[in-house]
Length: 467
Image (cartoon, rainbow, N blue to C red):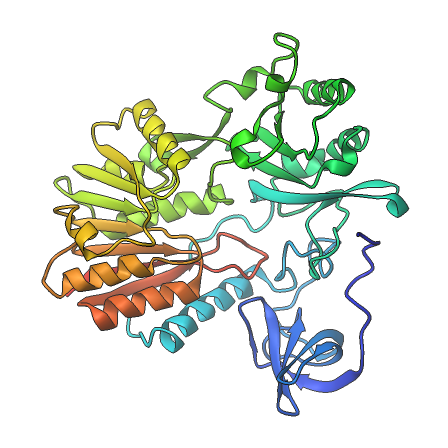
């Protein structure tokens, strides 16, 4: 199922002199040719180029660059040798400044074309390191006889094959450095052919957990080999095994005979993973299977900015919708009278409650499980007085919540200010349109956070004020 990383599929006919008009949501250059839209991977706005057709349909063409005739000033040499083949990044050919400008345009275009909203203040982009930032990742694994064993890496752009990686410049450096040794360890297991993927989680201080998904139980020899590898890393990492769903993931020591092996860092402060929010004197523990942001540096700036923009007062009652394990909740609790967190995942709510006790903020916070995709106006009214609200939904957005807030606002009820953090500009625009056009809300400010440098992913933050 895998192959040598020789690049994209075999090219077809050549299209000469395409003019790249824009860049789409996937980071592809967009041009037009004979009435069809042409998507060119790796092309930048303003470039003129020739491209080979990879796939052609009645309304569009997918193509790859054959030759650039006029190069954009924003183009650079990609910092990764696997770029163009690996599907982990799509924007390494653009400078960091150009990537952020592109993401700002995507946000603005969505708010206008989908939400019909303009006239708001443009926030300065939130940024951090552009390489070596990624503390969370999912790598695919596959045994390929023709390649001599186990391949470990991100999927290729086509999605069917795996990029065989010896290092990755976007991963945290400590995680990238351990990749060759980790692959060698896994390759020697009797169950190496039954390992489909690995999950990586890195702590703020560099300690890492690798969760190995196993499709069949490892042998005693396998467990010994894994334990020896873990011990050889001088307590810099912990190996976990996941036999079935995420709830089955556990430290390697739990699969070994009792007392035969221990990694002291694996059990200190829970799993030994944490991230910090120093502006709020917070240190947040998390499990390798919990959802956390991949970019701790940008997350710190995002939490600080969101809290600042909400303008929370000491008497305020604040609601954090889609609160997760409390990423925003506890920062808000430093300023508010009380913070209510709502989340659809029972394990995350349990973790938020445990964090509240550990951080000595249990008296100022409360957390409950709720399906926020199916709430209505009655549920929202039942929350009582809400002065400020933060909304941080998944890619699906918060349509039901936006509708209920819009209805409340028509009766001068609900919070005076909302801050919405979004990982999908199209659902943000949809939800913003509901608030603005169906309710009495105004989009006051919006901007991007470069949470995923080198990719086309657009993270954004928006402020809404009730009129």
